[in-house]
Length: 101
Image 1 (spheres, rainbow, N blue to C red):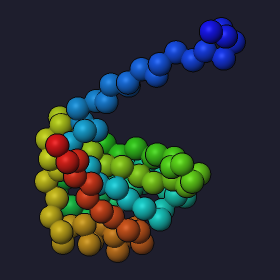
Image 2: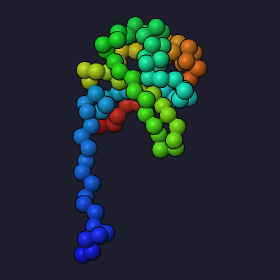
Image 3: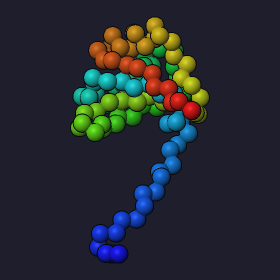
């Protein structure tokens, strides 16, 4: 076995429980920061600051998207009319991602 070309097996990264549960994905606003997107969610919905976090994620195609997920691992308490209001205020596309278990 050639030591130079040997690769160790990839270790599975542990995913935090908060990211395994349902999350909201926001597309088409790469120029905004995560804090700005979070402020839009706070103003347009009845969510509290402590209930959720927003992070900016770089995709494989070099574009950015935002992901909103809960801090405590429970489902986000947001309705479809709330999502429509946030979409209009941001000018973006939002969809819910539900992990299949």
